Length: 289
Length: 275
Ligand SMILES: Nc1ncnc2c1ncn2[C@@H]1O[C@H](COP(=O)(O)OP(=O)(O)OP(=O)(O)O)[C@@H](O)[C@H]1O
Ligand SMILES: [Mg+2]
Image 1 (cartoon, rainbow over the protein chains, first blue to last red):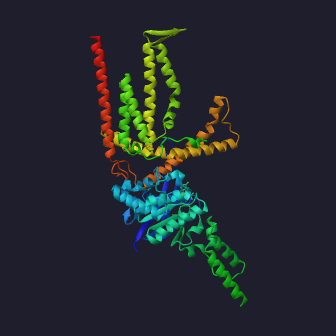
Image 2 (tube, chains in turn orange, cyan; image 1 turned 90 degrees about the horizontal axis):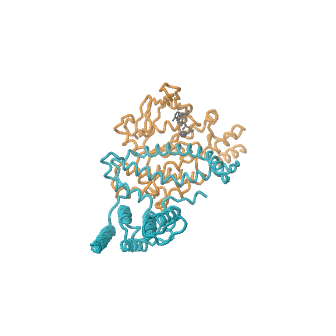
Image 3 (cartoon, rainbow over the protein chains, first blue to last red; image 1 turned 45 degrees about the horizontal axis):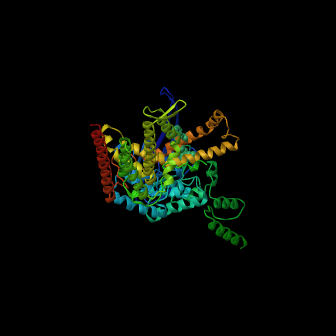
């Protein structure tokens, strides 16, 4: 498999200047980060507030270009200004607040917005819009005003707007942060399906650990640095380290760890409730034996 | 409470007028407006009235919706009519106190009344039968030639449509902030106008901050979706003239010609009478 997204020693500094243009202070939001994401993977980026996740994410579709280092999207260097539009077409981005990213006054118009920008022919736009809306299960709302939708529905419309641009990769920056549990599930289900069925690469930024149990890879950031990387099983086996970084772990993992610490011989880490139940059962059996 | 404000009072129904291209409707409205200012005789106004009635019937919009706009100009209308009635010089019919009511004044007042009424009703048909986004598209297309004098027409249209999209969002937010401030004892119903205005400051500040944050987010989202201004954009819903539009344009032409013919005829008559 080839690397769809790759960053090499990326550093990004926000420079704040005072009124005279003198540098007031510098925040190194991303510090020497190298990651690579393979085509078709679903990965997660986690880290506590201000750890640089959003800043890194903005590098992945050329909204920002690195102060130092290089980012490649599908082989294209993002600092190549002539290719910015190709990159934006290949890597779409969904933001946190569902209200602030819908441009159209009608659902279908919004989904078509990105395609219009790409200069796609009218008939094809319609085909893509219909397909995209169906793939997030929002087709029946195509004629509604976005203002009348729930948060989860709005977020799915935003995702449809990106899908219609036929990207290879979708970056989602805390897409479920403002949603209720039902809305969260709708959105996570929609992106999981995209990944499995359409083979779209997904980069998910989130604070909700339950959402990322099933991903292929997790990147953990702290103070701009990449501090951990691995499969969910690898990452969540280091409960103490994650806690130190100000992060939580899935509920089942935490309970499993506590049980283990209090002497129950279960194999760590436990990721899901079902796993936990069967592990406890197994451990008790072996205890009685 | 603020939710009731709807910009553009689109009346959703199916009719031949609703189906017309927005450009046709905008131009039609303009022709009608010009005609109202050009006309000044009874017969031409009768034609204008007939035209208005025809369009109203075809649009299937209840008349009371069109008269709503009258409320807004009620004061203006009254003042204009009274001004013309009492302060026009000419042959006095009767007079009381310091006022002189003249034949010319009476005529002028009646003319003004109908002119303004027709104007308001006529333009409200445009907004009642056209969705705001359609209206923006129509304006964009009609103003397209202005691109040659470097006016960013497509971008202005985009701004208008974004504004329309966010008005309900911001009204809802204002509502929320107002309720929050009320819960903290803010008084928005104070009889003292000055105090009432002052009580709106704690609403405007958070509203502005949030509006700027939204604008920033939206700009990022638009850029992420490859927006780069109007150049090279295609249209998902391009405007296309249909048979109905040509009928409408023909009707407009006939309306203009008839009215012109009558005006010429009347003027010819008076000319002959004088001679
Ligand atoms: N526009 C900006 N100007 C200056 N500094 C910024 C800007 N945006 C972010 N920062 C700083 O960069 C650092 C990383 O911010 P970033 O938004 O990438 O974090 P994050 O991991 O996405 O946090 P969160 O979980 O809160 O979304 C923070 O210290 C933040 O204060
Ligand atoms: Mg963030």
